[in-house]
Amino acid sequence: MKYSEKRLRQVLAALRVLVGLIYIYSGYEKLFDAMFFENGFMQRLLVWEVNVAPWYSWMGHILSEHTHRWAAFFGTVELFIGVALLLGLATRPAWWG
Image 1 (tube, rainbow, N blue to C red):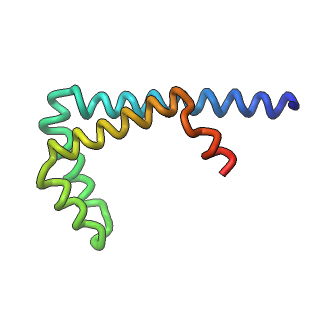
Image 2 (image 1 turned 120 degrees about the vertical axis):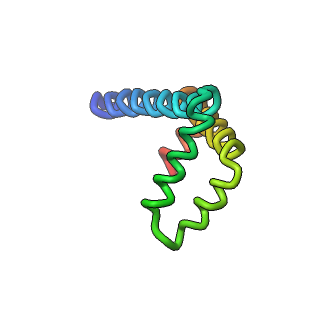
Image 3 (image 1 turned 180 degrees about the vertical axis):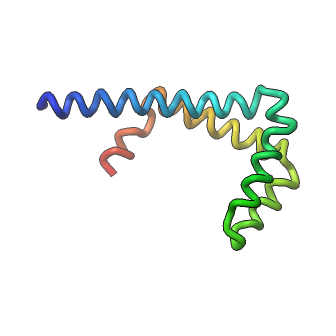
């Protein structure tokens, strides 16, 4: 293994850990921060409904009907993705395609 390939793998591993921590923080915020759970998710949905393409706005209406359920769902998924990235699960299949 060449030095540059080893260095590339180290940088990619550090980047994977950083992205995993970002996902964990975002999921934690959605699940355990009461202010975000009550108000923040709905505010983000309102901004998203305005900025999204008109043909995709139906999704915003579905999400805004049950914001607590969707916030819990998205928070849980983000937490699992973050933990999987931190542990390196399924990163080799994604790398080698």
